[in-house]
Length: 497
Image: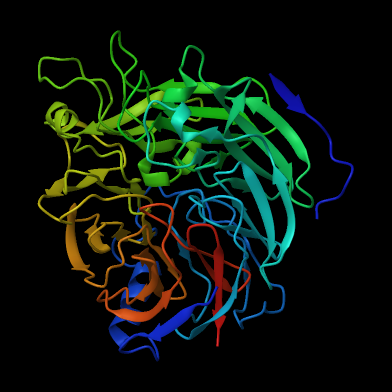
């Protein structure tokens, strides 16, 4: 059932900072690398035959927001733009930050990334609440409690406790002045997933639509992948709870922003098949040129070379209507399925030079063409890297990608002309969470710390303690002149000194 109403209103703890060994500024090498990432040189977006991602949200020149940054950055979707780049190209200097504010403890755990628009920070909690905070002070402007979250004990397995509510990052439609969020909630004592659209100005519910795929078991589904916008549709993914229990399938779902008929794509759709989660460590489906979507899928139920290929352990390209266009899977995808060493734990980096970088739980990085190529058709691979899982969204600028390895962020440079990649560095700092690239620095979280890394070397430039996180792979964001990070149930903001 879809409910669409019209709003009557218009749109409208202590933090310890530690300086890195060379906190004064980026090195010359780092500045040169960043310039190479964003220039029209080899491997850049200027090459002929590239695909590229959709453009970033606009930067509004508002006379300089607090903190001294020259533009007000709108961070309205996971990792900043529809392509999931995590890269703000505006001229900013974030090499000298200080703690600005810490929000009060919110009513539930924070798994998603903070979003920012119009001087307001938006976050959602596992208690099924959406908050609007003042970007300048952290004060709560409004809170809307959507529904009763699902007690963890009501689910067949999982590692989110004590309740499961909103786990993914919402998405903001700035044109509609609306934030969209998927809530896991109780309905007559049973779980269900509902897509809500809330007015940015006051949290008024303008859309309410159940989005569980027909015939699915909502208790076995976890809506972990972040939401994104593909034209006038909200797109998100479903996977399973931690432990891979129950009869779940991976799904990509697309719903009009006004509500109405959903489009769906199912992974492991064959008779007797299951699993194949679309979760990507919380990252959003990647929206590329012409609205095509790229997602990575988790382990499926086919574990023998004699079994049918089921689009698990894969990178998939889907049309805006969710029709499969291209795919890639390792030649031993079935073995990956049997040992839970799949690609689905991280998002693909769809680079503007026509290449795709993908890594997952197998500790292997694959370099792919944008058309993906099919089973075993990678351009190049590097095995035995990371030493742990890759989890979450990437950051990239030009032909260089920064990957979220739990043992430390890894920088990978690619060459379209040579169809090759080079591992530049892996940080030993403890920063392993999904990185973003803002102010000429790579920002990542790990062990309750927020790190700023040199993009040239991975060395620590700045470091701040924010406290332990609810999720294993938290990711920061940036907006209104502030670098934002979350701990278990609080939002922390940093501004230029």
